[in-house]
Length: 132
Image 1: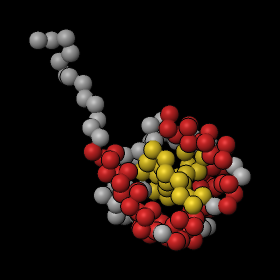
Image 2 (image 1 turned 45 degrees about the horizontal axis):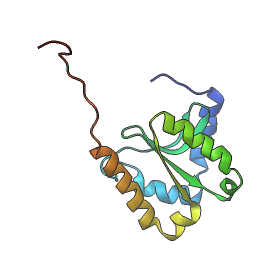
Image 3 (image 1 turned 135 degrees about the horizontal axis):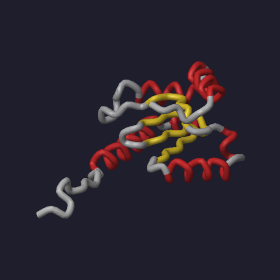
């Protein structure tokens, strides 16, 4: 796989994996090891100039766990989300409080999105274009 991020970002992601918040750990325990419809999530993934809390490559899903700081950086988060939507990703954002207080609803939402994306047919192109 071609690396599209800096070595510095790689080490930052490694440190973030070691220092996950309580909410991130709680969610990670429920989505790791293909527990949701057999899809594989990775944690603290370096991608371009960002570190993503959780990412699934197929289907393309990013899960972000937002702490208090995200209330002050909504414009930045919107730009970041747009960047990933342009690359075909679905972004799910959950607040720490949502995960701590209602993990079941968070997991239902993730499951609903995964199910929808798995069921979305991938466009195919005829192999014999122009031939009869």
